[in-house]
Image (cartoon, rainbow, N blue to C red; front, side, top):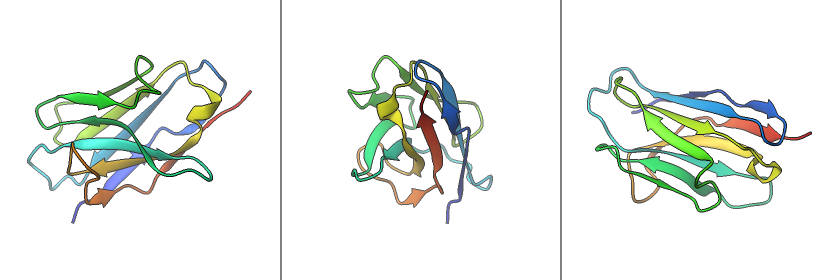
Length: 117
């Protein structure tokens, strides 16, 4: 069982920035792929960004050049730096653990990001 804890969501004006964090269970000692997904009201959940165990990254076209996914030295801690935020970025953002190529098995509880003036 993997527990994911997200933090960093909030309300920000258009053009602003936020940084999301996701930490997986401290009992995990092997590095694995992690990703961020989001779901806006009335829309399907979509991949925002993913990072492989080796550090490869991929992004949704809508966030390329604005968002950056990264991880630090702690196993299975991932960040999403979001810059130049737009109203259409408003959604619940979910951390996902376990796969670079498809949805992994484990999900965080979600954190709300609202971009509004």
